[in-house]
Image (cartoon, rainbow, N blue to C red; front, side, top):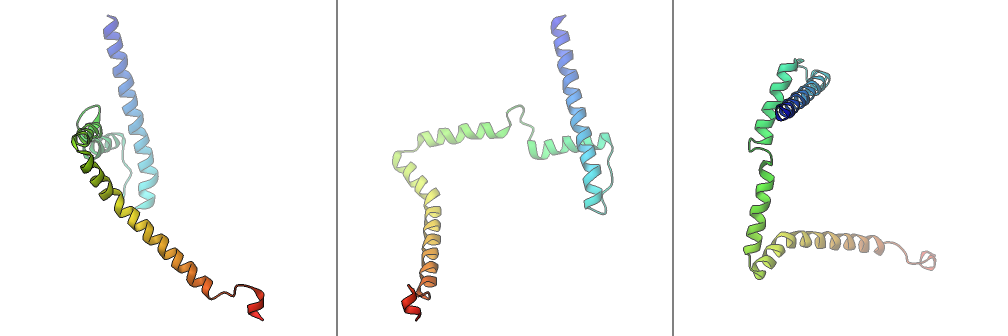
Length: 129
């Protein structure tokens, strides 16, 4: 009997949470969308619930509790462990080498710009006279 009560309680909390989230989506949509877009109309509660389900399907995936991010992390970790130290170094250089090259080029351009600006300025007041 206690187990049935617990399951019922969880179901009520889940339904209340989904209902509250649908209500928030409906209120935000009705507040923002008609004001931002001339052709947008207000939506009702069931349409807001459908919008939540659609966004879950399109953006959240249907893979259950963990989503696809956790599975991908393990995959890359396993691949990283299989690399030799030379391959890891090559990978890191490839990933960060371009950024380092870009940052060095930017720093060199800034130094050139400063040198160019300073070459037109007199060093002290005696040169001005």
